[in-house]
Image 1 (cartoon, rainbow, N blue to C red):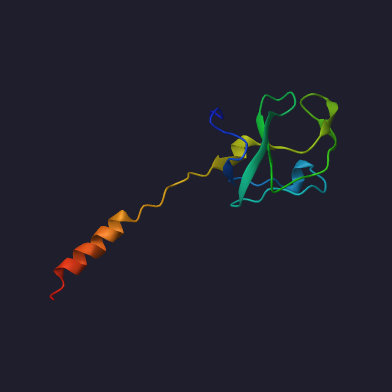
Image 2: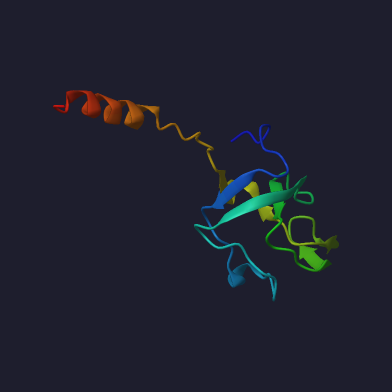
Length: 110
């Protein structure tokens, strides 16, 4: 998936919530099905995976052991972007329904 069109402030829905088994400690975690706002987009340290932080969840920075780098890193927990999907903004257009109502008014006997 290309993340080129993703941007800070974009609304996304969590499709695969994080769980405590991944070793996150006591951080607040995103929940499957909830809508969030992107606060930051960044590469996960050394893995090449695109990660995001969320406006609705702010955790303290701390030291993590990065398994793929085999070293400790300091920062705020971020989540892989592939566990989120963009929310598609749809403009509400009720002109079809308005036309149906107007058509019904014209058919009513006077």
